[in-house]
Every structure is written in C-alpha cells, then in structure tokens.
Length: 254
Image (tube, rainbow, N blue to C red; front, side):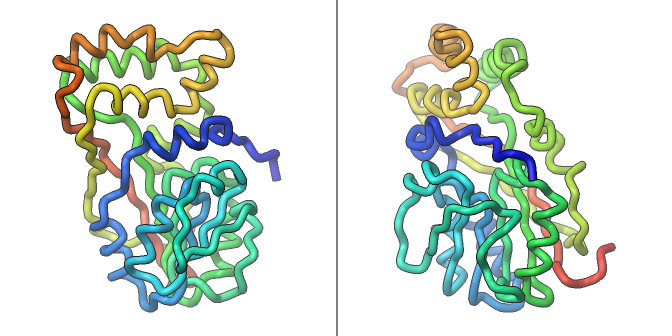
C-alpha cells in the first residue's frame, strides 16, 4: 500500500471545531436500510463526528482512522471504540459488521484493498455507504470570493484525490449492488463570518499554502469576504450538497 497521505493531523483540533455536521436524517435512513443494527464501522472516522451520530441507530460503533492526531480529537462515547489503523487492514472480525460508513474519506483510501476488506468484515447483505461534500454556497457575492480562493489561489495546493470529491464520487471504485433512489441531503450551518473563515482555514490546501508561502490566504481575502458578507456578526446559512452512494455487500453487483 502507498504511504499514508496525512493531510489533516497538523491541524486536527482546528479541523474538528470548524467542520459542518452531517444531517441526522442521513444516518436514520441508512439504519432503515440495514438488516441488523449490532455493529457499524466508521472507516476513516477523523474526529468521530459520524461515529457518534451512528450510535443513535447501532448498538456498537467501531471507528478507525490512520491518524492518531485525529483520533485524539474525537469525542468519547461508551458505545464507540476508536482504533488507530488503516482502513485497508482493520482489526474487525470477519462477517461482523452491518454497516460500513465512510464520511469524507473514501478518496484517501486504496479503494481496491478497502473493498476487499469490506467484503471480509461485512455480514451478508450489509451496506457500504460512502459520502462526501464539496463546495459550500452562501450567496452569489460570497460564493464569487470563495471560488477565487478555491480555484485561483489554492488550486495548485489541492491533492489529486480531491478530484474524486469534485466528481461527486461518480468515478470511484464501487463494486457493490448499488441502491437506487437514495435521498438527497444537504449539510447546513448557520455561521458568522468568523466561523465561515475558520472553515476555509481547515482545508488541507489552505494549510499547504501557508506552509509554502508563509502567509494565510484567507486573511488576504478577508476584506473581500467581509464586503460580500455584510455585517460580520450577522448569521448566514451555509450549505453543502451531500453526495451519497450506498451498496449492498456480499450480493451480486448490478
């Protein structure tokens, strides 16, 4: 397996505090599609946001991430067991898992090896759900400054795997019987300008830019964002479309 590409450990605490939350309806719907609810595996769990949410629907949650710094930022829960290990070689027993969940992490995996591991740990008929969100939307004025930052300033600093997120995971390896009519969800946050800019700073590309150039690109564009935002203390709705693919494991692919 290629060396682990760690894009977030250096700012794990910032990442944990500045990222949007997944909608509860997503996890409720996934649970409804599962045949049993004994164990869910949150692979590439990061700070454990999805892991905690899954406890509302599963008796136990196993949450793993290759980054110990990310796991250190995860919230403790009596029914979540965290582990620092690669998603491609997890410590779960064979045929033990009802749902494998991958939140904003599938593009970092060796997908061939991970899918083999999914087949190993999944109970017959278990689900694999992979989901990601890309660019946020606030208003036409704010989004124009956002696009300049995202493309023009940070474009060379995005890892190549980011393209899979931009494509809505349409081109990733997904060799399972895919469920049709998956609902559409959106992440939403009501943020002040300070909170919004903190989110932009949590991007891996932003952190790489700072390391390479010694200056914060978000701070450089803060006046333009402030003009587009209006009153900096005002709360505005920030939304991200959520791309979700769900497949049934250990059945024939369609």
